[in-house]
Length: 362
Image 1: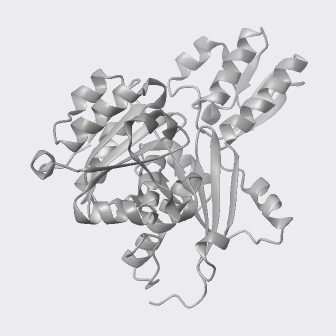
Image 2: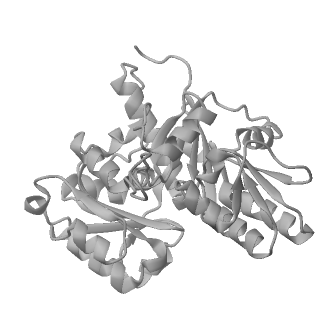
């Protein structure tokens, strides 16, 4: 079925420092589509908690599980100031999936807020706020949502174990096409992704790392290198660094580290090992990273000669001489560009002929 109406997508890359927002409209040049770079929800929540800390009042965490980082640090600072923190069960998982561990921090888990507590709403996407901001400029909120979040994964009864490595390996086991790493039905153990879909029914979900590296294929230099000889694509985000070995649209390997542990020397070693077909999951774990996942013929498919980087912390790699990707003239929209491309691909798989793509063509 061919889509006859212009396609409109609200693409949001929910990061640790910023939330990068694109209102994609297929009948506009991509350069003229509405774009916003705003503080991430974890930063917004942290600021609200800090205000309560300054006023010396207790807080109650309502809403949903969301990304941690700044918000978790603000909660711990509130407790350290001797002020009470209460939480509904689901948002308490923002701190940790083990409720006993959350209680040991000093958080009291309860179903309703006590009198006098400031209610702090936790959520990865504030759709009402975004809609209000866009509405002031006459921009209608699209009804199709594509959201990127980074999820560690959790299964009740599994202790503190994370399932992110299993998730990455499953992405490759499904064929490894980078464009197919978009979900309408996310795995049950990816509980942060599930929380976004409960808040936004029908939302399409992608991993932040996958969205960013897919998005930089909007840069013709990167697209040509990936197509012709293969490339290493790296997103150096505010909290995580995500790297893939790609040829054509097939991902041969994925590696992930914490951006706080990334130095030029660490990144150079990680990239060299990944490009040469020598990297292992154990080596990334030993480096303090999340791990790595590979297809069976990864080592035999090396080398991947070009290295392209994106992300707000890409300056860490500047002395290494890697190519700094600028998809459609805007590095900060790498994630949303990837979300749109993943959405277009998913719609094609479901039988809708869009004829659209944000991947650069010669």
